[in-house]
View 1 (cartoon, rainbow, N blue to C red):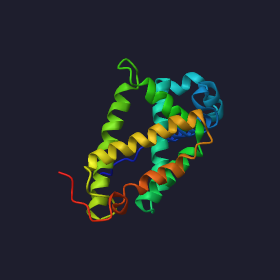
View 2 (cartoon, helix red, strand yellow; view 1 turned 180 degrees about the vertical axis):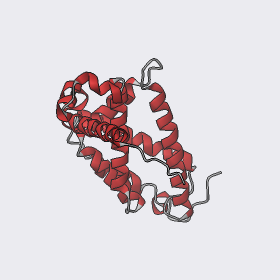
View 3 (tube, rainbow, N blue to C red; view 1 turned 135 degrees about the vertical axis):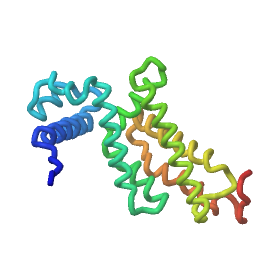
Length: 203
């Protein structure tokens, strides 16, 4: 009888090292924004700067991986809440980490250039987010939580635009309470904000 051999130590250690680098980058950017240097990240992990390229071949690869982690963290803060409270909680988490928020705003703006290394990443990210948010809004419309007199895809795109736009304004003026403003906008989506009578589904 033969037994399947389990992955040996080096493979596990490689995954652990990659995770350590990603976490160090997340923390460094959280503190310093995009100005965080690769040397700082390497020092936090205790490796040489060239060693980083084994796990993340380019700086952009590392920065985009950090943004993926930011998304995961934001979704974690939204879990277990109602639609409004969940999105507000996720927005508040973003406001508590200005370095990461600034990285997102900076990279997404630069990625509008088709020659940007991050162009395809953000193009796909927005397609995915729009589809995911549209499905979510449709579910909330079915449950009577969101107004049904406007198309779900329009509401989803508008919400994404509000979230991105507020982050840009917040970068210019940290006194802007983006979480509270998002909460105000979310209340505009509930049926009672649409009209005093039950709205008909949009065609």
